[in-house]
Amino acid sequence: MSKIIGLNVSCHDTCVAYIKDGEIKYVLEEEKLTGIKSCYNGNALPIKCLEILKNKEGVTLSNCDYIAYSNPIIRKYVKDNIESFNEKTFCYSHHKCHALGSYFTSGFTGKVISLSIDGKGNQSRGKIYLCEDGDYEQVHSLNISGSSTLAGLWGCSTRYLGWTQLKDEGKVVGLAGHGKFSKEIYDTLNQVFYYKNFDFGPPEWENLLDYSFNTNNSEKFKDNTYRADFAFTLEYFTEECIEKYLIDISNKYPEYKKICFSGGLFANVKMNQFINNLNLFEEIYIHPAMSDAGLALGAAVCLANELGEYKYPKKLLNSFFGESHSKSDWDQELKKHSNNLYVSEYDIKKIAKLIHDGFIIGLFIGRTEYGPRSLGNRSIIVRPTDKETHKKLNERLKRTEIMPFAPAILSEYVDKVYMNCKSKYTAEFMTLCYDTNPEWLPKIPAVVHEVDGTSRPQIVKKDSNPHFHNLISEYMKLSNIPIVLNTSFNAHGEPINNYPHQVIKHLLDNSVDFIVTEDYIINKK
Image 1 (cartoon, rainbow, N blue to C red):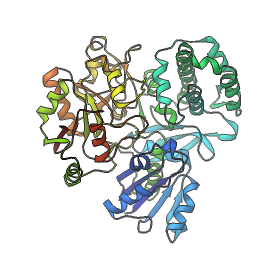
Image 2 (image 1 turned 120 degrees about the horizontal axis):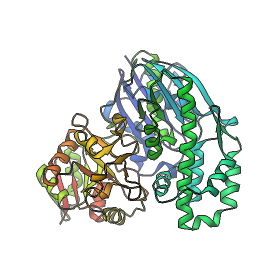
Image 3 (image 1 turned 90 degrees about the vertical axis):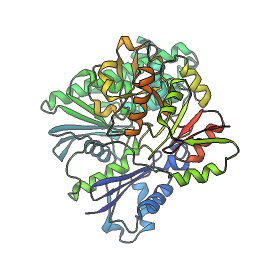
């Protein structure tokens, strides 16, 4: 059995994974350790990630058995830091890492399709794999030089709307719910982008798109109505293209009833809901780190599979593969603020009452989540019952969010609150939306899209996160609501916070009212 380090370095999403004897031990993202969003820190080396592996596990590039990576950019760095480079390093294609990282964490048995799509990898914009009980075969690739990309279309559109590419695409998804269909915008998109026979085109899509919108229509993007209609029509057009693609896939491989998705395109939770509701497949799964943050784990999984140490798909119990901080770490940090902070012992009933009374609670418990979603360990939680919470939280956190905040819901109540609840496993990682049961709309307005009535829930199971499940259950005793609002513990422009000093700053800045750790309840004097 082996110690495998997986690496990814690219223009965004530098990350490191560690698999020991076929078990995922760590998956670390450099942005959460530096406090700098990856879109502002391109090609960052995984220095802090590797430091944690050394300090926590005693494993380094030199003493591990194998190194797997997904991008040649990292090759020189690895070669400069180890001996026996050729004997212990293995490089896998970008989209193989995406697709197999998703498949091997899906837990799916039998015949499964794994599909990846993003802006671009080394030579491809996406791939299709046919998988069955641990075996796999690539059957299609979107060659960069001969294809276009829906993910790139969203990146450019985010920029046209004045937001940051590779960071704010979710704002476009949220804005779409406020617009309406525009035939003019649709016709323009249709002229510069198409899907046909398993391929997206034309290859020169970016120049055509930039000319059609950024050059000819740049002034229109200052108009709020046009912006919303553009986002709505972009979402509509994207769903239309992906539907045609998936129908072709389903027709060609009708015996494959489950499908895995990966790549940045599948960060679009509304599109994922649309796919789920098509009923072309019995179940869908979106990798929790669908972006390039999934590549390090994907590379390590590819190698572990080849070595016979990760033979079959496994379900993830949770996505808590990051760093944790001990009671002594907190005690050391709290000493610096003894004149400013009250510290009391953890009391679940008191915390539930604080939530029920409308306070903003920051949870900092256990290990940091892997991927873009906070799932109860690095979360800000609030009661979901007040419509004005969206505005209040944005002001307190200095954010400009358009996408509704997400509900974290006890698994036992999902079918009561939401409709058409297929693919519940992937919803544990907050990767798709559901329609909200109409009778619940007035009860939980803070976590429902005000226009279309959808929610992006995190399904909380007791075995995957007992602390969070117990806390929501305690709140439910007071409120009869099995849901709390859950948003990531960070302010505007920050990655999810990873250190005690970061979240204490938010308490001192009045972004949150209380911080809750495994041991303490902390608030300002």
